[in-house]
Image (cartoon, rainbow, N blue to C red; front, side, top):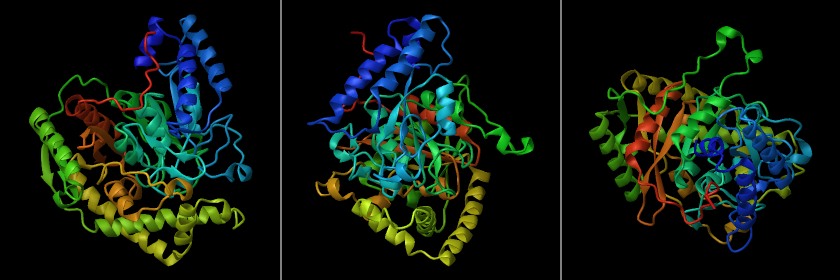
Length: 471
């Protein structure tokens, strides 16, 4: 929204923003920072798009509120003129990018400046966001800490002010985890809400395109632009109606019931419990929202069933390329793929039985409550180890704590949103998550907006670029 207002007032142009963006990326990618934001970006392509947008504003004919706004794309989605690597060194040779992904095409039609392909955990097989080929996407709040993954670059560019929004893909918290660790909003829509044409099919029943944004309003604008089935792919009676909430709220939403599973909610670090509990009390006191105590059975079994599902799907997809590229992976991806390849078809089927059972448990909760509330992650960002920069990293202890609250969103296809609500003792961001019933994105956006209004005293990260500055 700030970009749109600045462009419309004439105080700055998309071309000026593009030039500042290119200078900032150049500076941040070199020592001493080495932020690892992007895998690919092209100054020439960015300037071409910015020139076209600047001309549209001069004529008084911007296409939309997104016209001229820099948007980054995770390197798991096709976006011309760039190759799609999935964080590997080889995938683009086997699978050339010939067109934009559907969600990218929709942003381009709105006039957004697509500024490049962001860094990610290799093939999305880890949650730290450390890539041995392209470097670690470092956390703008502390460059010695992880950003979270696998949509690491997309979270960091938004946190550092380079883009107000970026796209990621969330197969196991991969949008919400880095959003929380980097202090931005992360929205993961219902499975199937955003078309997946042009997105790598790494985990086709659990992964979905999501949005990382500086504010809930910007997440809503981007969600409105990219959501909705491709009508030619579905009979008209199968299309699901999209409801877009009106922000700011014209009337208070006071009849909200939040489902909280206390034992699960508290299974996190002391700083996270304190911060998220404080935020919850603020919401109850300010809006009159009620908390309902619930139990979600077999949460650990669901985490393992999800891991088995996402791993089996990733392994099956990789098998189509044979073994010839195995030696080109980082060590963490090799270990992960070996584990995934050991899962059997029988185990995969058993995991799907548990999936159906868990969906029934969750729908019973949604019969009594509007959303489920939890912290977004069990811990805040942890330190990057020097050896992990060379080998990649599989940290199953911290990894389990990071994804603890993400699983139902992916395994059951439920929509979810994370909103920054505070910081730990070291000044690292903490997020609060709302999980909704299928297709309830409008409710989640309303609740996220209400939370944003009262729960966060924003602290600028140490690495931050103000592309709209007036000098």
